[in-house]
Image (cartoon, rainbow, N blue to C red; front, side):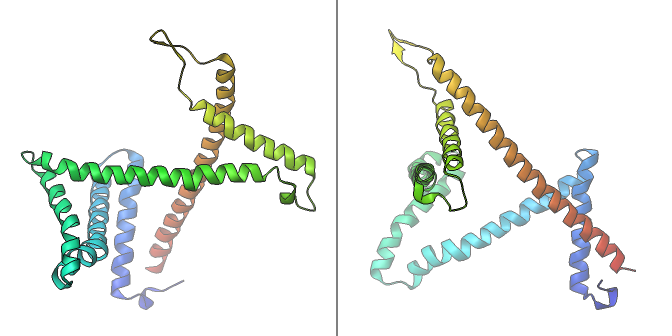
Amino acid sequence: MTSLAQISLLELVGAGLGLVFTLFVFSYIFGDNALFRIAMSIFVGVASAFAGVVAWYNVIWPQLLRPLIFGNQSERLFILIPLFFSGLLLLKVSPRFSRLGNPAMAFMVGVGVAAAIGGAVLGTIFPQISATVNLFGMSAVNAEENVIWQLVRGGMILIGTLTTLIYFQFGAVRSKGRSAARPEWLEWLGLVGQVFIAITFGAIFAGVFSASLTALIERLYFVVNFVLSLF
Protein backbone atom coordinates (compact mmCIF):
# COMPACT_ATOMS: atom_id res chain seq x y z
CA MET A 1 0.00 0.00 0.00
CA THR A 2 1.34 3.46 -0.84
CA SER A 3 2.19 5.56 2.21
CA LEU A 4 1.46 9.26 2.55
CA ALA A 5 5.18 10.12 2.30
CA GLN A 6 5.38 8.47 -1.12
CA ILE A 7 2.46 10.48 -2.55
CA SER A 8 3.29 13.77 -4.24
CA LEU A 9 1.25 16.89 -3.60
CA LEU A 10 -0.37 16.76 -7.04
CA GLU A 11 -1.39 13.13 -6.59
CA LEU A 12 -2.71 13.92 -3.12
CA VAL A 13 -4.84 16.80 -4.41
CA GLY A 14 -6.14 14.70 -7.30
CA ALA A 15 -6.99 11.78 -5.03
CA GLY A 16 -8.65 14.13 -2.54
CA LEU A 17 -10.81 15.71 -5.26
CA GLY A 18 -11.70 12.25 -6.53
CA LEU A 19 -12.77 11.24 -3.04
CA VAL A 20 -14.85 14.40 -2.54
CA PHE A 21 -16.69 14.08 -5.85
CA THR A 22 -17.21 10.35 -5.31
CA LEU A 23 -18.91 11.11 -2.00
CA PHE A 24 -20.91 13.88 -3.67
CA VAL A 25 -22.24 11.40 -6.23
CA PHE A 26 -22.91 8.80 -3.54
CA SER A 27 -25.03 11.39 -1.72
CA TYR A 28 -27.71 10.80 -4.37
CA ILE A 29 -28.63 7.73 -2.32
CA PHE A 30 -30.44 10.13 0.02
CA GLY A 31 -32.20 11.87 -2.88
CA ASP A 32 -31.46 14.80 -5.15
CA ASN A 33 -29.40 17.37 -3.27
CA ALA A 34 -27.06 20.32 -3.77
CA LEU A 35 -23.87 18.23 -3.49
CA PHE A 36 -24.97 15.86 -6.25
CA ARG A 37 -25.98 18.77 -8.50
CA ILE A 38 -22.59 20.42 -7.94
CA ALA A 39 -20.81 17.22 -8.96
CA MET A 40 -23.01 16.79 -12.04
CA SER A 41 -22.57 20.44 -13.06
CA ILE A 42 -18.79 20.17 -12.81
CA PHE A 43 -18.86 16.90 -14.73
CA VAL A 44 -20.96 18.42 -17.54
CA GLY A 45 -18.74 21.50 -17.63
CA VAL A 46 -15.52 19.50 -17.81
CA ALA A 47 -16.98 17.19 -20.47
CA SER A 48 -18.15 20.18 -22.54
CA ALA A 49 -14.74 21.85 -22.22
CA PHE A 50 -12.99 18.63 -23.24
CA ALA A 51 -15.32 18.25 -26.26
CA GLY A 52 -14.63 21.86 -27.23
CA VAL A 53 -10.85 21.39 -27.02
CA VAL A 54 -11.03 18.18 -29.06
CA ALA A 55 -13.21 19.91 -31.67
CA TRP A 56 -10.76 22.81 -31.88
CA TYR A 57 -7.58 20.76 -32.26
CA ASN A 58 -9.05 17.99 -34.43
CA VAL A 59 -11.60 19.83 -36.60
CA ILE A 60 -11.76 23.63 -36.46
CA TRP A 61 -8.05 24.48 -36.55
CA PRO A 62 -6.58 21.74 -38.80
CA GLN A 63 -9.51 21.40 -41.21
CA LEU A 64 -10.95 24.92 -41.31
CA LEU A 65 -8.70 27.73 -40.11
CA ARG A 66 -5.20 26.45 -40.93
CA PRO A 67 -5.99 25.74 -44.62
CA LEU A 68 -7.70 29.13 -44.81
CA ILE A 69 -4.68 30.99 -43.38
CA PHE A 70 -1.69 28.97 -44.56
CA GLY A 71 -3.13 27.02 -47.49
CA ASN A 72 -2.70 27.68 -51.18
CA GLN A 73 -5.30 29.29 -53.43
CA SER A 74 -7.18 26.08 -54.26
CA GLU A 75 -7.35 25.04 -50.59
CA ARG A 76 -8.71 28.46 -49.63
CA LEU A 77 -11.39 28.31 -52.31
CA PHE A 78 -12.39 24.79 -51.26
CA ILE A 79 -12.58 25.73 -47.57
CA LEU A 80 -15.03 28.55 -48.30
CA ILE A 81 -17.88 26.02 -48.63
CA PRO A 82 -17.64 24.54 -45.10
CA LEU A 83 -16.84 28.01 -43.76
CA PHE A 84 -20.06 29.33 -45.30
CA PHE A 85 -22.14 26.53 -43.79
CA SER A 86 -20.43 27.01 -40.44
CA GLY A 87 -21.41 30.66 -40.50
CA LEU A 88 -25.01 29.69 -41.25
CA LEU A 89 -25.00 27.31 -38.28
CA LEU A 90 -23.82 30.11 -36.01
CA LEU A 91 -26.87 32.13 -37.06
CA LYS A 92 -29.07 29.51 -35.31
CA VAL A 93 -28.07 31.19 -32.05
CA SER A 94 -30.06 34.31 -33.00
CA PRO A 95 -33.88 33.88 -33.07
CA ARG A 96 -34.06 36.62 -35.69
CA PHE A 97 -31.69 34.96 -38.18
CA SER A 98 -32.19 31.32 -37.18
CA ARG A 99 -34.01 30.55 -40.45
CA LEU A 100 -30.83 31.26 -42.39
CA GLY A 101 -29.18 28.36 -40.62
CA ASN A 102 -31.87 25.85 -41.63
CA PRO A 103 -30.16 24.80 -44.91
CA ALA A 104 -26.91 23.99 -43.10
CA MET A 105 -28.81 22.17 -40.37
CA ALA A 106 -30.82 20.20 -42.93
CA PHE A 107 -27.63 19.23 -44.78
CA MET A 108 -25.97 18.12 -41.55
CA VAL A 109 -28.99 16.10 -40.40
CA GLY A 110 -29.36 14.52 -43.85
CA VAL A 111 -25.72 13.44 -43.92
CA GLY A 112 -26.02 12.10 -40.37
CA VAL A 113 -29.16 10.11 -41.17
CA ALA A 114 -27.63 8.73 -44.36
CA ALA A 115 -24.51 7.67 -42.46
CA ALA A 116 -26.62 6.07 -39.71
CA ILE A 117 -28.79 4.16 -42.19
CA GLY A 118 -25.78 3.06 -44.20
CA GLY A 119 -24.03 1.92 -41.05
CA ALA A 120 -27.11 0.03 -39.89
CA VAL A 121 -27.54 -1.72 -43.24
CA LEU A 122 -23.87 -2.51 -43.91
CA GLY A 123 -22.79 -2.97 -40.32
CA THR A 124 -25.80 -4.73 -38.78
CA ILE A 125 -28.41 -6.07 -41.19
CA PHE A 126 -26.11 -7.59 -43.83
CA PRO A 127 -23.71 -9.13 -41.27
CA GLN A 128 -26.70 -10.51 -39.34
CA ILE A 129 -28.12 -12.09 -42.50
CA SER A 130 -24.71 -13.49 -43.45
CA ALA A 131 -24.11 -14.90 -39.95
CA THR A 132 -27.57 -16.49 -39.87
CA VAL A 133 -27.08 -18.11 -43.30
CA ASN A 134 -23.62 -19.35 -42.39
CA LEU A 135 -25.04 -21.22 -39.40
CA PHE A 136 -26.68 -23.67 -41.83
CA GLY A 137 -23.48 -24.28 -43.77
CA MET A 138 -21.86 -27.63 -43.08
CA SER A 139 -18.43 -26.00 -43.33
CA ALA A 140 -19.23 -24.06 -40.15
CA VAL A 141 -19.78 -27.24 -38.12
CA ASN A 142 -16.84 -28.10 -35.89
CA ALA A 143 -15.49 -31.61 -35.79
CA GLU A 144 -16.50 -31.94 -32.12
CA GLU A 145 -19.99 -30.52 -32.62
CA ASN A 146 -23.14 -32.41 -33.53
CA VAL A 147 -24.71 -31.50 -36.86
CA ILE A 148 -28.21 -31.72 -35.36
CA TRP A 149 -27.30 -29.31 -32.59
CA GLN A 150 -25.77 -26.92 -35.15
CA LEU A 151 -29.01 -26.92 -37.17
CA VAL A 152 -31.13 -26.44 -34.03
CA ARG A 153 -29.02 -23.50 -32.93
CA GLY A 154 -29.12 -21.97 -36.39
CA GLY A 155 -32.89 -22.46 -36.51
CA MET A 156 -33.35 -20.73 -33.16
CA ILE A 157 -31.29 -17.75 -34.29
CA LEU A 158 -33.17 -17.61 -37.59
CA ILE A 159 -36.55 -17.72 -35.81
CA GLY A 160 -35.44 -15.04 -33.37
CA THR A 161 -34.24 -12.78 -36.17
CA LEU A 162 -37.36 -13.15 -38.33
CA THR A 163 -39.90 -12.88 -35.49
CA THR A 164 -38.15 -9.81 -34.10
CA LEU A 165 -38.31 -8.12 -37.50
CA ILE A 166 -41.97 -9.13 -37.79
CA TYR A 167 -42.70 -7.59 -34.38
CA PHE A 168 -41.48 -4.22 -35.66
CA GLN A 169 -43.56 -4.52 -38.85
CA PHE A 170 -46.41 -2.07 -38.25
CA GLY A 171 -47.71 -1.85 -41.81
CA ALA A 172 -51.25 -2.92 -42.64
CA VAL A 173 -53.21 -3.51 -45.82
CA ARG A 174 -55.40 -0.54 -46.67
CA SER A 175 -58.97 -1.26 -47.68
CA LYS A 176 -61.40 1.48 -48.75
CA GLY A 177 -59.39 4.23 -47.07
CA ARG A 178 -59.09 2.39 -43.75
CA SER A 179 -56.20 0.46 -42.30
CA ALA A 180 -56.95 -3.16 -41.56
CA ALA A 181 -55.41 -4.98 -38.63
CA ARG A 182 -52.47 -7.29 -39.13
CA PRO A 183 -53.24 -10.95 -39.80
CA GLU A 184 -53.50 -13.12 -36.73
CA TRP A 185 -50.51 -15.28 -37.70
CA LEU A 186 -48.37 -12.16 -37.84
CA GLU A 187 -49.56 -11.24 -34.34
CA TRP A 188 -48.47 -14.65 -33.04
CA LEU A 189 -45.08 -14.37 -34.71
CA GLY A 190 -44.72 -10.86 -33.34
CA LEU A 191 -45.45 -12.25 -29.87
CA VAL A 192 -42.60 -14.74 -30.29
CA GLY A 193 -40.37 -11.88 -31.39
CA GLN A 194 -41.41 -9.95 -28.30
CA VAL A 195 -40.14 -12.84 -26.16
CA PHE A 196 -36.76 -12.70 -27.91
CA ILE A 197 -36.66 -8.92 -27.42
CA ALA A 198 -37.41 -9.33 -23.71
CA ILE A 199 -34.60 -11.87 -23.36
CA THR A 200 -32.22 -9.52 -25.18
CA PHE A 201 -33.16 -6.57 -22.97
CA GLY A 202 -32.69 -8.75 -19.90
CA ALA A 203 -29.21 -9.75 -21.03
CA ILE A 204 -28.33 -6.12 -21.79
CA PHE A 205 -29.62 -5.00 -18.39
CA ALA A 206 -27.59 -7.72 -16.69
CA GLY A 207 -24.47 -6.54 -18.51
CA VAL A 208 -25.09 -2.89 -17.61
CA PHE A 209 -25.79 -3.84 -13.99
CA SER A 210 -22.60 -5.89 -13.73
CA ALA A 211 -20.57 -3.04 -15.26
CA SER A 212 -22.14 -0.56 -12.83
CA LEU A 213 -21.43 -2.90 -9.93
CA THR A 214 -17.80 -3.18 -11.05
CA ALA A 215 -17.53 0.62 -11.18
CA LEU A 216 -19.08 0.87 -7.70
CA ILE A 217 -16.59 -1.65 -6.27
CA GLU A 218 -13.72 0.24 -7.89
CA ARG A 219 -14.89 3.53 -6.35
CA LEU A 220 -15.31 1.97 -2.90
CA TYR A 221 -11.85 0.45 -3.15
CA PHE A 222 -10.47 3.86 -4.14
CA VAL A 223 -12.10 5.55 -1.13
CA VAL A 224 -10.91 2.90 1.33
CA ASN A 225 -7.39 2.82 -0.15
CA PHE A 226 -7.11 6.62 -0.04
CA VAL A 227 -8.29 6.85 3.57
CA LEU A 228 -5.92 4.09 4.66
CA SER A 229 -3.00 5.75 2.86
CA LEU A 230 -3.41 8.81 5.08
CA PHE A 231 -2.53 6.80 8.18
